[in-house]
Length: 502
Image 1 (cartoon, rainbow, N blue to C red):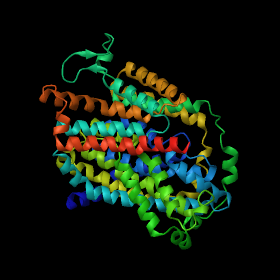
Image 2: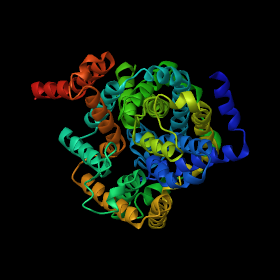
Image 3: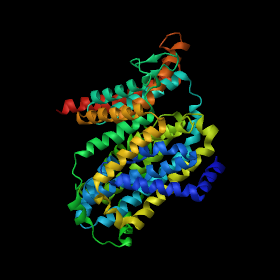
Image 4: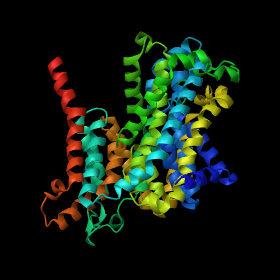
């Protein structure tokens, strides 16, 4: 394993591979920093272009986008009070307060420094745990896999923001989309309305492009292209690059305990299916405030609060990749699309992946590690530019994204029908957002639906229809208990407490 990891780092020395990493990193910076665009959208747009790439180069590029996109959501959050991505929302609270105090470069520097530490911790834990967790997952039988997928579906649903009913409805829509087409166990068409187009099913790429790219384009189309322009002009001074280096006093003010604790929280939340960067940053921020010597500073320009949220959301990247590669369960929306990248290249995420293709995956691990370092390097090299990213003309930007999205869908399927399907799913996703339904559970439903159905039906075939098979298997029973525990801790108990306090 150590030799393969070393080979992964050596692979990054190859000029072409390193260019893919740098290209992905810069793409992630731009998409994460511009409000309305995210790392999820960047990887979704990249997905069709990975067809012609070497699999290692594609994974390296995706890793660069992931790490940079999660970090750069804080850039416009700090400078304009408009987080470029949901992961930067908590950072914005203290970051923009520091910006208004004239400490914008220091806030950006601390954000990058903390993100680098979190990313490095997440990458190291990923490298250390990936193969042991994968070996453990190989012991899973079909009922255990069903309970694991059920855990992921339930967790994604209950951690979604807003109404539980709306999150469950969105998940159900995703599961329904996954059932369109030929039955996986019997060669019979389902829900195809006697259309030879639908008999092929709805592809993963049209679903991803529709749920994120098309939906986001429709949502952003109503916003004026000059949003935040006046603030952006006011925010741009002429800082020197050394101004972006966090001072020793600021680093000591945060403390190694906050950095380490927040990074570990980020990894653990990332390993939880559906957790995501936003939840990681929120929980780490709350924990940092609880243990802070001066909690009253939080919300009014606290470097400790800023560092805690940023360390957690980038540490989440390494944690979210662990369940994806070892069990075939995406940890968040980005890893759900990385799932598609792997499938495009014939790699099926799951227990056997690291055993048979570790050499192919190792450069991705190395890329996450190196990208964490690049996060801090970028703020020194590009800090002054960060303050101007928000001035890009929205009209031209979104027109370009719309074109790339549709061309990408067609290039992946050579089907005009799939292009129309991506548009239809995009309109549906926009309507869901308008009425407060989360989109991520719908995507996870599309991803996990086939596995949920397959493992359920295979288990019942083996047991001749007896559902007790899910309780007689120790691992399956433990996962079902864990599912119930999550429901109690994350939904039932908070609801009961709120009713008592109300």
